Image 1 (cartoon, one colour):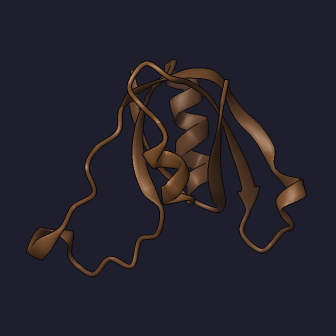
Image 2 (cartoon, rainbow, N blue to C red):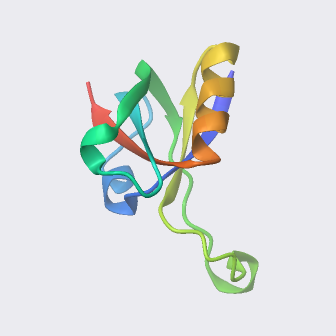
Amino acid sequence: MDAPVRITDAGAVRLLRPGDRVDVLAAPVGTPADSARTIARNVRVAAVPEPASGPEAGSGGREGALVVLSVPRPTAARLAGAAAHSRLAVTLC
C-alpha cells in the first residue's frame, strides 16, 4: 500500500527519489531528537510529490514535505499514528 507521509525536514525529502529505501524515525513533539524511535525500516519511496504552490497551496501552515512510501498496511497505520503527535524524519538505507 502507498502511504503519504509528511517529513519535517523538507530538505531531506528533496534528496529522495522513487525507488530509494529509507528508515522512518519519529520523535514526539517537545522531546529531544535523541528520543526518536524507528517506526518503519527499509521501506521504498514510491513518489516525491512536487510541493503545492500558488492559490492551491493554501495557508495550512504545514511544514516539511510530503513523500509517498510503499509499506504494508500495519506500517501505514503506525506511520499515520506517529504523524499525529511526532516529528518524522528519514534516513537513507
